[in-house]
Length: 219
Image (cartoon, rainbow, N blue to C red; front, side):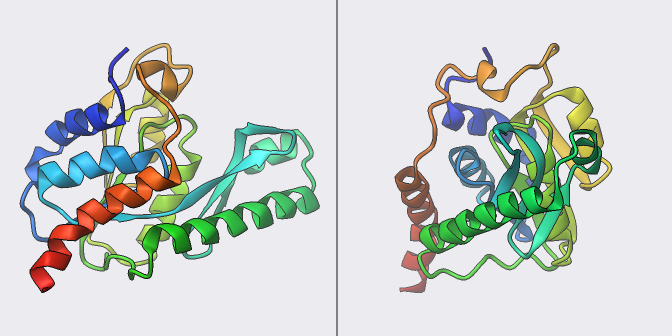
């Protein structure tokens, strides 16, 4: 066991990102839902703005816990072509999974943003945060989507993940920061004492808290 909960994991991860503290070009983007409590602590420690970046895993039909790809805000879709070919998953099946997850992605965008515009990322150092990595498909989709918006630098930051996934992501992001890379690695939740699902209400509350100082400054 490495972390008490996602907030504790965020505080640990923030220590590994301390060189970004106070940088005016840094912005923290959380992958909902589980990445939001982690990213909230990172943004607080770095004194950086916090926003969300919605990514949805595309699950293997009938075995949704296995990812065949992912989609992200901005129309980005990443597919595991080898897995799809190996198990002969039809284009129609992939399209059905994609349509379902696109609807959920749009729902979360509306729910979590509450009318707020996305944080600008062009020319910024973007720190993409989740509560852990497994296959890395969701994070690869996020990196690809953010890259299309012309940031200066993309930093993937997670509390825990397998070494091979971290190495693979290093080919896509400018930097990958992973606080723990245990071996053997079987599941992200194994390294948390409390890995209860983050709720929509918790996501909304943390984002409201993160945006409150900015709103107070405007008024």
